[in-house]
Image (tube, rainbow, N blue to C red):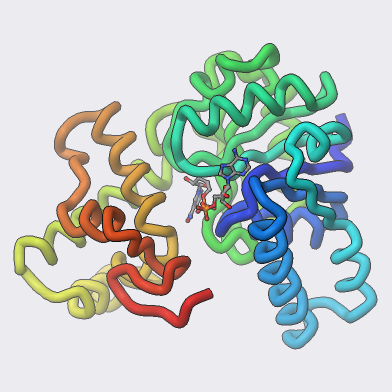
Length: 285
Ligand SMILES: NC(=O)c1ccc[n+]([C@@H]2O[C@H](COP(=O)([O-])OP(=O)(O)OC[C@H]3O[C@@H](n4cnc5c(N)ncnc54)[C@H](O)[C@@H]3O)[C@@H](O)[C@H]2O)c1
């Protein structure tokens, strides 16, 4: 099956980034979210990213214009998916919200369409179970920021068909990225390893072993991390990191319990870069 039209549900940190990557690689993309206001903000971010691409010489103004016209927005989910060959869901990391989205998308998308989730940790098999096409449901787990990160985990649910896996892998390669296939399992590969590292760093801080800047610097200088764990957690979004940690705790046991400061910051609405404050403070996006 040839993928031409992609619909992305959810236009937040990841959704808008995936839209950018797909449009930059020639796909026609419809971006959906719950309101026009949210979609307008996402389009502003994409526009800024495109302008940045021109300034850095990555594309010329004509290419940028063509790319821009490949992107459209629609706040009505059923309309947004009606011509899709591939739907990529990037809504909140919450099983109930994802199940509702998949049910609606399943009812409205063409029969041949593949339905993918960008979930960080949740079960693809469980998400697929609410659809009438679980063999066409798969995980396509992009990393943040999608334009820069080269990996996409291709997560295979219990009922995902081999053809779906092959089409998904080809799609990832067409974006200039590397697909790594993983069986459906909490956190797949990267987050099973990475999210507990972030949580452990926060536990060190909670226990008074060292301060935030020093722990970040220690991991950059001592473990060759490109950014420290606190800076990374802020970039990921503390709500996303907490939801991921809670899934690992629920599925794998109490040693994955979320750290105190992580829970407290999320309760206060300090979610990292996207809200202007997390472990560090930022100029609001
Ligand atoms: N942030 C990361 O670093 C990262 C990396 C990889 C994967 N993920 C995963 O990607 C998904 C999205 O994460 P994010 O960081 O982009 O979150 P986000 O909070 O930035 O964006 C989520 C978006 O989904 C929209 N949304 C919520 N319910 C919706 C619905 N019913 N219909 C349409 N839109 C809806 C929200 O309005 C919001 O714009 C999550 O599953 C997350 O685990 C996140």
